[in-house]
Image (tube, rainbow, N blue to C red):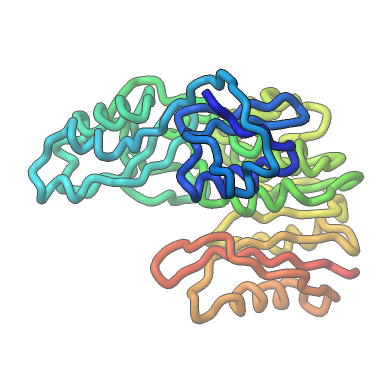
Length: 340
């Protein structure tokens, strides 16, 4: 097969241009010898083409590429539901390792096992869960039903971090990916961080593994989540960095122990601000999460911070939207520095 030989530094731009011309053979992989890349093409460039002047055409044997097949049409075909029910099938899902979570409308609950089997087959999942309600309560337990499979424990990889969990027992918010990535990009070298709502380690692991915190104290009140927090500390080889704490974070001993405090919880986070201010050191950063109505945000969070600080000097570093939370509501995070 003919390939265009391109210096590695120019490869992506050339591939993009060739692709726009319809010349790239997408069923074949590009080859890379460290200095050049070899782009499989359908035809040699014409003599008046700038690529013919700049790059050499060579004969290579690139391996085949697995062509992605959109699974949803196959799911619909396998189920063969009447059109009024077919339109209700979820065309989006959450994948955690080899477990898939879907949200079926009540009109489809009667056929949930068969639907779960179809999604499992096309998505190559060992288990499928149906989300039947919202996460609620201080333990943040998911409201899901198993509709296919038996074993729901899995290992999910995200951003170079491994998370072991059972989605039947503990939550995992894929919607917080942007914020987890932001935490991973921080420079926490030399810092002691307190994660007040660690869960299975959603923020703890990126802070310890990627942001290179010196120490992360990870607080979790839910015994199931704490179990997987311990598992994930071991799985990511962070035993020397992460110190787990089982219980209410307000019972964590010590004052002015943290250079950074993460409050990755929404709903009643304001109640925990006094504890965050107790454990943060002067010039330390607090990442304060909560939900607010679109019209009142971010005033709700800023007012809560001002009330909790009660004259203590601080400055707001940033206000960011994590995700849309519900109709007319947003999940926000305010980073503020406590100056004294």
